[in-house]
Image (cartoon, rainbow, N blue to C red; front, side, top):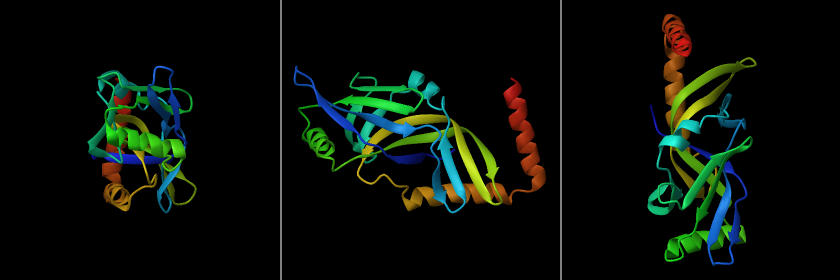
Length: 191
């Protein structure tokens, strides 16, 4: 399974508490929102896709997926993540002793940064045909490793190309192989 990033344009909000605490809050992912990865290939996140990760993972909030700029972390209690009917919502408490974190807070506050993303490994997916040639990949379970506040919330071409290669490889498999894979998935669902 490959690491993937999914990007969204969402409006983050900032808030300051009377005790001086600063927060960045918003949705890092939205359920049932189709994103066109390339022509005729779409992806969306199913509700419940993050449930296991939220229970089991120590998820970090990064800036632009850069592991050198950790803004918050669930294990330290500085990052709160939860799902609702809309998607994956998060709130991070800004470390006021961290200049980079304060810079990100200021840029979000001014509206200069409004994008978000999350890095994940797809654990369960399903594919559906939409119309003649369109394909929808629905992520049923995502092993979330990190969420990010991002400057450019668009799929970078390298991520898209990595997904496209995997899809083309699966499409090129013989029909017997595809039928066997579908049967195996159905057997796994019966467990």
